[in-house]
Amino acid sequence: MRIEHVAIWTDDLEKMRNFYQTYFNMKCGDKYENIIKGFSSYSLSFESGARIEIMERKDILNGSEEKGDVSGLTHIAISVGEKDIVDKLTERLRLDGFEIFGEPRTTGDGHYESIILDPEGNHIEIME
Image 1 (cartoon, helix red, strand yellow):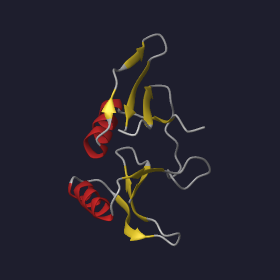
Image 2 (cartoon, helix red, strand yellow):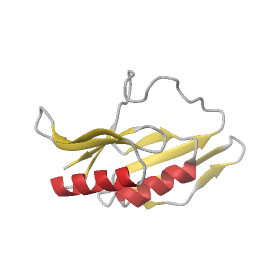
Image 3 (cartoon, one colour):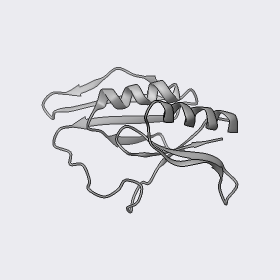
């Protein structure tokens, strides 16, 4: 068994698509639209085959709690392969104006990672 994909509701489908393609080199499938339901989505794929689906529907409410600090899904961890790449990507995101939620470090359980917020405040762990 394996996780096939993770799905994220978004307020700005194109902004989120651009973010994941630009910083994580994801390939994007064709845009899916269901006009009747007012639903649109993209499927984004890593080279490994893992996928993230980003979805937009205007009647989806944005939660008022701080993302990552409530029960439920808290973050997505993306492995970039090397500590140096964690550092470089974190700095690139910082220079491009994204919030760094957790600076690069070795965690208590031995993982080297940083935590950034995507354009809509979702926590993304960038891991070795």
